[in-house]
Image 1 (cartoon, rainbow, N blue to C red):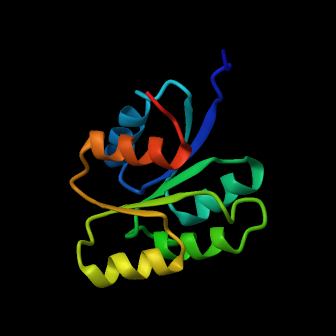
Image 2 (cartoon, rainbow, N blue to C red):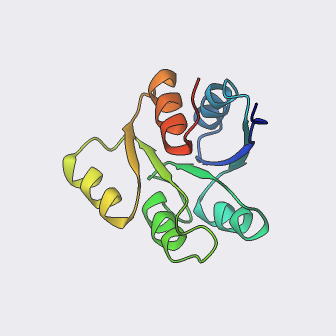
Length: 129
């Protein structure tokens, strides 16, 4: 039998309440270890010091927004192929297209529904129940 692989997720969200909600939802995936960042700059600092298997990011954040973060991740040698899930209040189709064209793998609008987030994270990481 295969030993369970562990995965590392980076959750980038400026709202402490929303960040906690995401961390709590992701805690249901026992193979997943979560690191939190409060904006894009904080996320970049954490990306320099660690390796992540998936990144979940908001778009609207101070200092550096999620779209700039996606652009930076896609040019980073270590993390350029890491799946990125954008989770945002921006529901316009042009926002979705812009995020996906920058390299996001998925786009989920708030208010978040934990089962949708968990299903997408598991799908992108190849985790089967």
